[in-house]
Amino acid sequence: MTPLPEHLRQATRARTQKAEKRARTALAELVKADKPVSFTAVARHAGVSTDFLYRSPELRAQIERHRARAGSAPAAPADSPGDSSTSAAVRALSARLARQQRAHREEVAGLRKALETAQGENLDLRRRLARYEAD
Image (cartoon, rainbow, N blue to C red; front, side, top):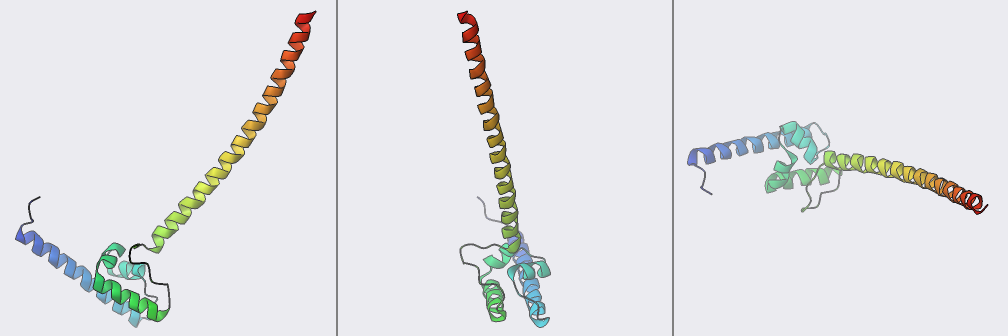
């Protein structure tokens, strides 16, 4: 893989610096407005991703420090960055899966009941046929 040309590296650096500046400004505004500080709130306010905030050690430390000071949400583990939208999506999908499993269990129970009935009728017809042929 060839290295990036210098002008692309400079553009990337400038874009990253602008995003960091927006994140710092957003954090300061949230603290000044006495609003809850979280990775999601800062990311939304700054127009950056939560992943960007988690990958920036300085921003991450500042957000965790303000979050802990305010006593809002507990600090996220260092190895599992995520946000509330991810956990909400997981909860929604889990609930959907549970509903589908319940529906499938009910359907299987109904099918078993129908199979038992059909097997009983089949046995009865075989017995009647055996009696008829014996005559």
